[in-house]
Image (cartoon, rainbow, N blue to C red; front, side):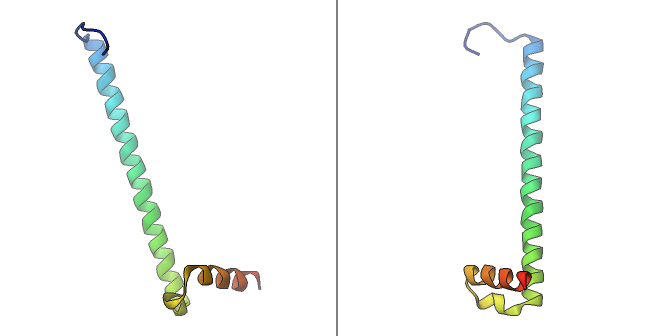
Length: 72
């Protein structure tokens, strides 16, 4: 706090609640990132199992090939 007066109990509780909320939000963001990473890995694994050639292709080539095959 900017002033030198001690915090009241209500101010302490409010600050503590704010910190708890920030921690909950951080955990939720981390869970979302991990879920997205897992999903992307699974999709990549499926792609490699169906289309093994992607392992040796450049990413742009993979993208173009997928577009070509999906639009056909």
